[in-house]
Structures are given as C-alpha cells and as structure tokens.
Amino acid sequence: MSALIPLCAGGPQLSQVAAGLWRLQQWDFTDAALAQWLEHALALGISSFDHADLYGDFQCEALFGRWLKANPSRRGELQLISKCGIKPPLAARGWRVKHYDAGAAHITASVEASLKNLGSDYLDLLLLHRPDPLLDPDEVAATFERLRQAGKVRHFGVSNFSASQYAMLASRTPLVTNQIQASLCHLAPLDDGSFDYCLQHGLRPMLWSPLDGGRVLDAAANPRLAATLQQIAAELGCSSASVALAWLLRHPVRPLPVIGSRRLSSLDDAAAACRLTLDRQHWFALLEAARGHEVA
Image: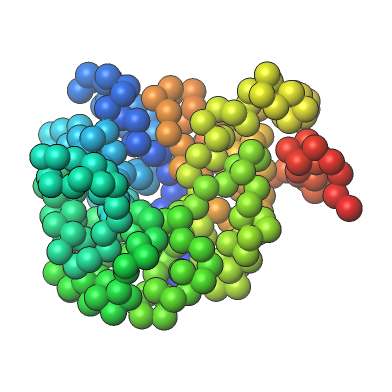
C-alpha cells in the first residue's frame, strides 16, 4: 500500500483504507488476538482506525485502548478517528429517547471520554456522527476551535451529512471529510451530489459499509453482481471483495473505505484492492450488474 495521503489540502494524512472498530466488542478478542489484528493491519499499511464513542455500548474505544495503553510508543504509527453526537436511549445517562446532540457540552465531554478510553492525548480526526437538526453552526465552530487550540483534536469533519448540510457547517469551520455510506449495493452518492460536492471542493469522502455488510458478495441476494465480481476477480487473480473495494477506489473522488471485520483476510483483501486499478469496462460492468441494467 502506498504512503499516507491527505483527505484534503491541509487535512490529515490517512491510509488508503481505514479499519473500522464498530463491532470490536462482538469479536471477543483476547488482548493477544487484538494485538495480532492490529499488528497485521499496520504491517499492511492500514494505519487509520475508525471509532465512535457509542460503538459497542460505549465500550469499543476502551477495548482498543488496552493495546495502546500497553504500547504508548506506538501512537505515532496510527491515526485515530472518532465520532460523536448520537445518544441512544440509556437510562443510566438520562437519555429517554434516541436523539442527536451537537451541542458544545456533549462534543467536549465525548472527546474527553474518547481520549481517556483510547489512551491518547489527541484525536487525529473527530466527526459529527449524524446531522443534528438543532445544530448551531457557530456553537460547533467555537467548540471545534477550543478543542483544536487545546491540542485534543487536530482535524474535524462530519458523517452522513448531505452536501448542503456539509456546506452550511463548512461555511463556519474548516472540515476535512464527510463519512457516508457507499458500496455496489448503495449507489446513492453517485447521484445525490455527495461525490460531486467532494470533487468540487477537493475532499476525499470516507465510506462506511463499503461491502454493505457482506451483501455485495452474497450470491443469493445479488446473483448477477456476485457473478460479475467473481468473473473479474478470476481475470485479475484476486478476491471478489478486493474487486468490490477497487470499484469504489477507482472513482476520481478517491474515497477512503472503512473496513470492519475481525478476519485478517479481510484486511488482506483491502490492501490488495489498493493495488488494483479497474479498467473502465470492468467498472461499468459492475455498475450494470449492481443496477440491473446498462447505462442509458
């Protein structure tokens, strides 16, 4: 995999794909198994790790942090990304209904908790997890600046924002990315302006669920797509997963997929995808298979 590349001009330098920790709690890793997984990712050049405060009922960051606290000298080898802003119903915290909170107090408290749990003095990147309809852009901008000045967060972005929502907040504070859903089973960013906006403004979007939870590869759910992936994979001598990820990476917006799997082979597939360049006909064959019809 190539060296780190910036998300935008002046933005953080991240690996070409990121490792997602959404399901870390479910993986039932021992400390030794987590260390093996992390070392494997880093050896492949996958050095950016995607977290959120609420992942695993607010436990995943602390699980990951056990490794970093045991290996503090390794902090400079990786980039830590976290997200905040979603409050699920949680009686212990006084949250009666699921809601969003982009207020200063919650953002600040979330960052402090993430740093403590991860065992780090700073986050490389903090994202607002969902667009909060009560978001005050000036309050968010002031909060981001305080965290930046304190050295606790180096860069800021958003997740799941529309192009107009991104533009609104970016008019008040520098943002470096939008983490959105995209895959061969979720093609909306090609048509809803998300990729267009990123291209216009020189931003690399991060992509969550780039294999749509495995559905991209599911022959029962998507027989035509799975068959086309298998055919191209056989031609190129790689896995179907690598081809599906390479399809995303081929887009000129240069997206950064987030891979969330405990399997070391999934990390290998992601690294292999970064070495593939699909030709135009392969790319359109997969688009046709995903949509179920050829382009007009």
